[in-house]
Image (cartoon, rainbow, N blue to C red; front, side, top):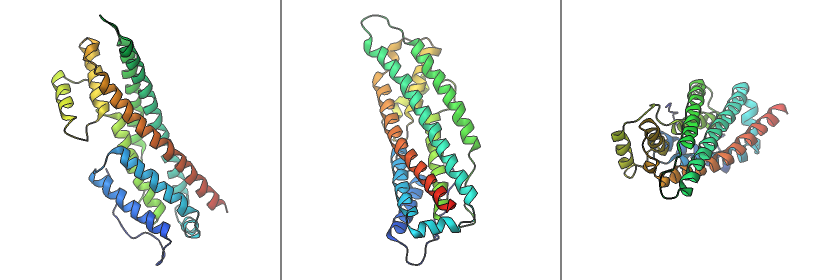
Length: 261
């Protein structure tokens, strides 16, 4: 993952308090992203709060001056559109995965004594995950780093950092690229999940369901609490993404408005 050096932003000698706040939020999120010291949900929440400050900054004369004097207006607009696309791709993948998880849970909760079959629901989940991984792989391949070496500009820094956080999000949703896991690997992964905050719940659930299908094991190896946990994580991320998406739209609209005047 690319790192972006903290440097003095293009503010005047006595910046507005909002400019100071934006600078501080940028530095904190850069440090968090580089050191992986917080959860993905926390990073996305911090990114949403950063865009709240960006929205306020762009309403100020200093913010509008920053936009009007920039030398990379086309790149800035292209970048804002790309961020919206990445956010939408991530949100769609999360929604589809959550719906398939809910289908599996619905069958598990209706089970009575004796045998029951969730093969079709698991197949649909795994197909959805396979499709999402292909889309995300292409999305990650198409992401081009924001040029962050020439003009010092706060909005350029914000876009570059947003790309980094979104790459982390896409990698989390995609999970492991391995097609199948051994039973010992699955047990090891489950044992590790309680001792580390970095465990990818998508990997754990994917491994369990792949094992069930590939080795034709009974549905009782599926731990419904693990499905609920993943669904809960998806829901949290989805809610933050929805709010962040609205801020991205607002920021792009403000950019277009300022540049058209």
